[in-house]
Length: 232
Ligand SMILES: *Cc1c(COP(=O)(O)O)cnc(C)c1O
Image (cartoon, rainbow, N blue to C red; front, side, top):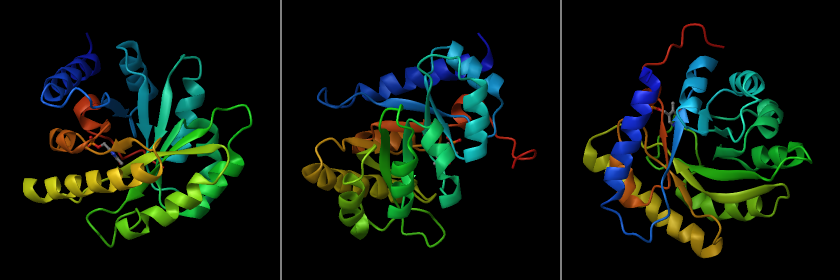
């Protein structure tokens, strides 16, 4: 096994172990391998080890990788980065899921630009749960209004929420995950299909599981350190 296959196997083992503590009624937790800044060969190594869901943050990098790896069946791209409105076309073309919807305008453009022969784009609203001035995401109080507008758009389907808690001590991060769970319950009361809750990264995902995470996004835990040097 190469290193990526080993790290992946280890992450799935830990995930299974942590899931033993959860109620059986919980939907399965999906692991998204965040491959931003990593070469195609790294994605391929993870794919060959059985991984199918990959996360990307930069539109151009997504396009390049998706084209290079288009021959791989079932590989699914999740766009998880900030979105500028002039980059929505690339995302609408290549992504199956978008976790980082934080404005109606972006959702409208994705809806208009989703190719007619693609399945509906599955989208999550990103919540700025730690209320950081510098972070993307909407305030919790804006959730239901944005959800109603997004839900009305054709070609995209509202599936849940995503958050990136600010780094902090365990108590603080846990409080943010708990707040996300409460928001998710509120959203599901209006939109029963919006069951997904994308939260938890390499250094905090075990804390997210008890609070209803259904998708965890792991980069360094799978691929090692990122190299930003030759990046766009
Ligand atoms: C980069 C990134 C990740 C992965 O982070 P790691 O700490 O490497 O696991 C997850 N989610 C988002 C939104 C990211 O930008």
